[in-house]
Image (cartoon, rainbow, N blue to C red; front, side, top):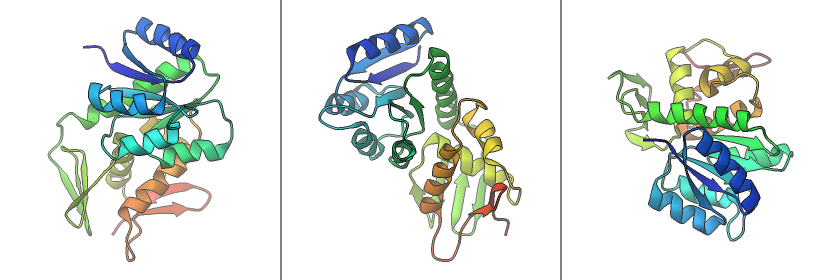
Length: 227
């Protein structure tokens, strides 16, 4: 079955261009033209990935992303014409997995989609039965679950891949460039700020008043503390 892509944009010419390129790559497409329609179709039709424009009628892309993250973990790629870093960061903080700034090449967009689909597929595939326990955290590699004090923490596939990689290499420091290559699967399209925001989200979800699990080596990168 071809992967099903939900395209959300209020400009029909952009939707038509995206639809043409995605169908040519073998994907199935669904279209939505405002925030309300996007939420309804995302929840009802269960797409494999969502391409979500920021500037939308009724609900903007940030609001749509936040509302969807309360219910589903489908990969979301934000589409924005804005260059301001704050908009990119806000999208990631709302739970987006990735973003692409307009104008973008079809090649770049397809690379992002395939990368996110690979991560999502891994998240739904039973693999190793290992469970890693560290202090009040339990990381189940088979179920793609992280528990803190016995309670499941909601995570995107990308967030899980990042925590998994850092935990399996606890104590080793990784640059943002290395993490972008290993976790996001691309070297040349990525904005390093993506790594920073994802690490920040993980820290908020994992930390407590006693433990900080993901640490920063100033001027080098990030690492998971080794007990």
